[in-house]
Image (tube, rainbow, N blue to C red; front, side):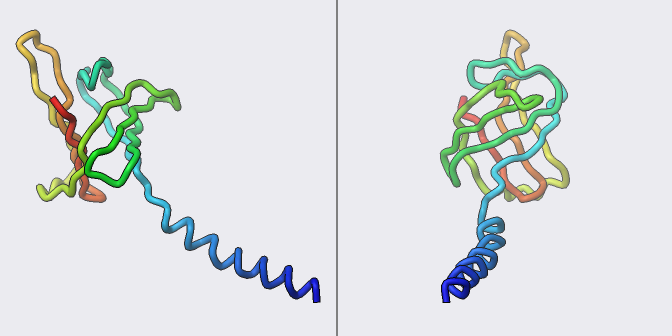
Length: 118
């Protein structure tokens, strides 16, 4: 009888585990930044970064990681990307001091965008 109880519990967990894995949101993406930019109070050098965000939107906290280390954190607004971009895109502004400021990251898939406050 005890064996049957454990078998039932184990079977239930085995069925629920894949559902939990699919339910987990992937709030991360890899981006290539071609030129150095300012995000928040941090200067990001050109290169590839892993971008992760906390929350489901619209207000999220974005973390930029490189080689597994946190390089910068900044608040952003997550929105559905209605532009229909074909590939990931980085949108920047240039200040009068010729400094690039990160304004937006558009993801082609899953059609989301991160907008950074000015």
